[in-house]
Image (tube, rainbow, N blue to C red):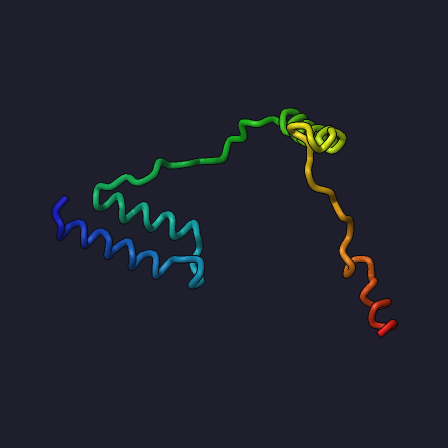
Amino acid sequence: MTAEVERRWRHERRMTIRLHHPDVGGSAVMLRAALHDVDRRHGKVRYPEVTRHVSTRSRRLHRAARLSRHASRWVRGWIPRRWPGARRYVDIGPTRQSRGSDQIWEEET
């Protein structure tokens, strides 16, 4: 592709984005379609057509992974801190603001 054709292609893409971008009131679907048309006219295929998202992880597998993470966190909390893999921090609980102690603090002052 020559420099002039490349410059024209970039200019058309920029103008298309300015017209159809969601931040200026356009639609993401329309933007994608317009950019695809510009690319096709200039002979550039930048991305394959995607029809739908296919999930490769089943619900059961997802649930098992989540339970495994929670179990390992619980077990690491019970291992003595000097051992490798132990949790070396503590959860201090809710903050002062969430317990409403700011109201008591203001009354005392």
